[in-house]
Image (cartoon, rainbow, N blue to C red):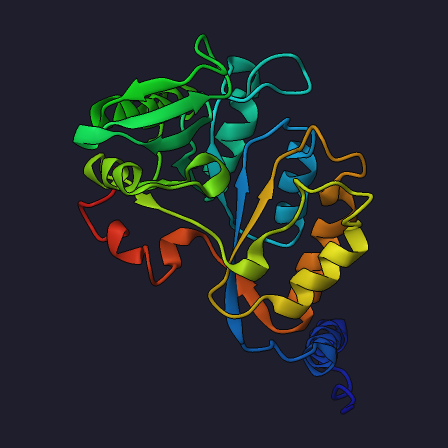
Length: 272
């Protein structure tokens, strides 16, 4: 390292020290790796037991994800779109994440009916567990109820995306979603986290390895913000090492607003 020239007084010495420090930092900093591919992390609501952990992990890695919202019962005894969850949804919205509808009462499709109708079974709400016959307009209202509640909680609208509970679709249901203005989002085969599976048969280490080995550029990954039935929770054991492992492989992360299959929905004037 060059020495500072004599007595340009202490001011010169100070400037030289600053320049030298800057050179050392620049030389020691590792080169920024090019992004070798993108993974699209998505999270469906659930028991919400892992909501804070997921938020903090995404913050730590400066990652934006996509959340699909339903009004599901939580570990606090309330529901995930109740006012008590407003701070979480407002923070996530302000941080730039994307959001889609998962139907308000987490409504499963049972089968198609004549005339474009759909037989459905809500998991929550006043009609929970009952088989109902809905028109496409009724299903549309169910999806838009999430949008209305989200706006009340955050002041912003959902993105034009939806995910049917369980990922179950029928031709009539798909048409109903499209007519309502929402594009359906499934997930890649390697993108199934397995957090809904019994942990004694599908341990976290196995699920982590499967995801790290199988995920490739463009894959959509699915996990939940808490699963009631899994004894050994997925997120505390898997989310951090999964993200770190994918980053080490050169993957970047983005919301579905950037996914090639959906980015056309976000041109000026087409957003909800």
